[in-house]
Length: 377
Image (cartoon, rainbow, N blue to C red; front, side, top):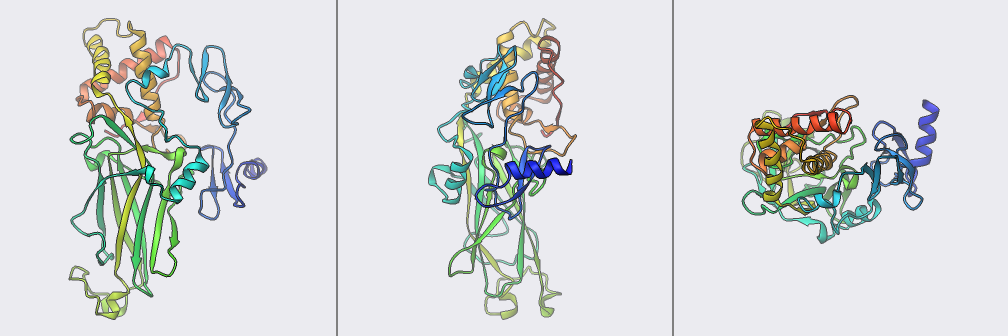
């Protein structure tokens, strides 16, 4: 296994002059230098059922042909009776901004305005462009309020950047913890970004020329892009505190004239979410979900409408495929139920009935394995 890992790392994780280690369980590279440019295209998975029969000659990371009973659709294999193009009428999963990974990384590093998403900055503890004492936990949020303002869209996050300025000779080492609410909801219905775990990227920090400011950038790219409605950012700091300030609460006003305190203060000059929006027909999707829900509550053959069941199974799979990474052996988070709850306004009983109907159809009719997910909403 050690030699196999070394060979895989050599084959897939030495692009652009950077080196990394291949993680077979996640099919991704962890780049040694912290940047995410060491990964080459990783071959598709060849196997039975919905795995590839052969990889594409034009793009080795996608399927070139499929097994019996499955058809090729945009580089992946799906059951022949699933019409993914029909799913696009409900949620436009495919957009003009579906760039290749290297294109996407280039655009994110250049902070291309096509990938800007306008969000509302909310914080009771800090203000942008204002120095503050970061020794105690600070919280800020970036939100969209789609249920009020942009009801016809779902939103994808593919990157996050912050410009942070520190005083000269600063002893502060900021640390960020980020929680994501995929479709609105309470803070408990969000998940924490696992920086550096399971192949997940880390923050990249670059100092701006001739300044005390740094660009902090998180590049999720196509591998880890996901739905978001609100991003909660918690700032904690490690610092070597001067002796005269060790008993200071840090709750007083900012005093830039005090040389001891000056080296502690920082300010956040800019914060930006990168991503794009998907068209979302809530009324049409709600109608399809209610068909399943009504048949189930009436005790009729709830999978009599195969086209509706296949449609919802395809949408559920494509939404949950964008869930964050999970530890080996752990199920993925159930983002589909969060969408049912917060964007279609279903109650808990309706959510349970719809998911149970889809699971029964999948296992009894399609003979597919159980759909195991972890509850989030």
